[in-house]
Image 1 (tube, rainbow, N blue to C red):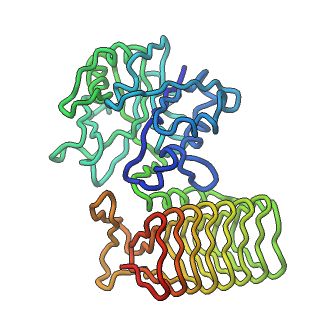
Image 2: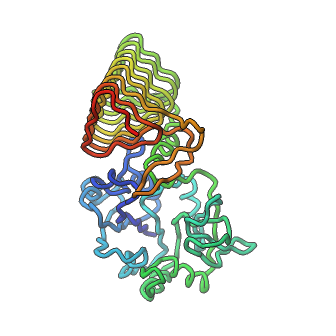
Image 3: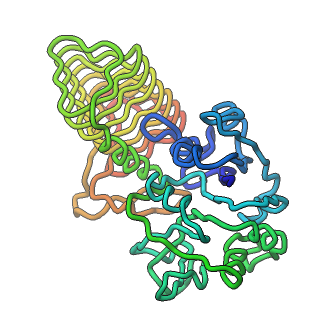
Length: 392
């Protein structure tokens, strides 16, 4: 059996983060999204076929031609004409896994899919099925039809884009016609497939994480940090450091005296924390970051080369690369009316579903001393704030 992973997408809702990397290569804790998926399947397949396009060289340079001795091959999707178009031209003679490369499905659920004897797909019950492909099933959980983003309620089971097919699927993909959305959609091939084959829906038992928006990265980080059962301390912890629960401290990273870490956290290579720093609740700090004296950070994610100056206070925030935060940076966590935080994405205000979400700071930002932000604000690439500025 072989596996095909669709990894050609750009992830426009995550821009400008995905201006520099493809969505499947976004880091969650200590590795890219795509790597978690490949870890779940490599021992059960003879080959992993990656469908790539956007910034494909980043994926190729990271994985090369093998993953733990399992062969990797690449197919470039030259045109964006839908998921079905990405698979046209492939013809395999054995069962195949077809997976989405920018979501995280628990490895135990993936194993159930792999071990199925007939065709299966993974599904989940959700409260907002209208934004997914909805699966209509019979009493035996046989899939009858998938309806993409229905205008009215059909069912609450949705496709997680994880399938196991017989080779018949490739004949049906080859014969796909343009949909009403002017795309070649694998959903149409699945609907034809279930007319000819028994195809069952299996509801996942564990977690599924779809990285739609930047704040979903915080949820994904929490998912994996919660599984950290013991600390991995690979470099320097000075005297008088307190560590509650478990952490990962990578090579050349240092925890300076009087730093206090509460709950599981990750500190990447060559990062410096403290002295007198307070890290709380599943914070992820990657490479070459400097978190200085008397800074408090909770449930946040910092990419590479982020420097947070003294006496700053940051909760539930995301900061990308090459950022310098000046002294006394304060981000407001809550709206005065106590409603959910909304964030501007693609020129639209999107409800995060969170009561607390502070700030998103993009690449190459510099804030002057005493900069403050209102809840849910974003500071765009290359912005420099003025002393005492309030980002509204």
